[in-house]
Image 1: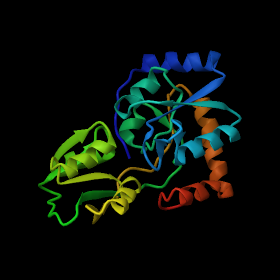
Image 2: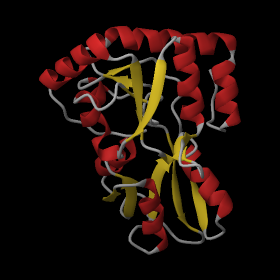
Image 3: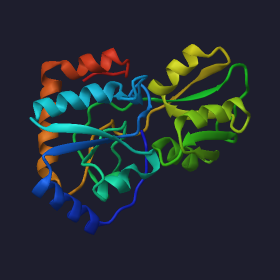
Length: 241
């Protein structure tokens, strides 16, 4: 699902050492702006599929966790620099990201991406103007296929770009776009789905192997007992394990 990165090995090593030595609380970093994966509810708290999942993983791993929100475009650099200890933010596992951080096993299957456009509009997906959130796998896909890419900092802005004529369509996770299409008569999902990314996993510093193993084991236990599939079905995220 999303794609960004930069960081240094020195920062990662320092942050990992600090975690190992002194942290009794594991800080989970998320965006809080990408429903149904994560969003801020009316009480001002992190909510969504990943809030439920993260809380359960921490319980199973016997970890005390707290939630931290961070803008998407700096979410990997701020993990590397130690502002939190793990990313759980709808982040697709990609080879490019794996060069900078570590990942747990995936906790969702690869989610189809979809195009959202104005109802009745004729959209040229190969030669038109397509919006995507910056530093996502969708943005990379659009750039590679040759369409004109316009990037925005937040997913809400990509949808607004379609409405105000800045873009012919937006490409994003279908699980994010489907409710928007269902709730807005002027917007429609196009028939063309795109399968990109390797599923969503938790991102951790490469130096935090022990923490990654704890979360890996917790994810596997939820797969084994069916509780992960139940959460995926509850939040309508598509294919189960």
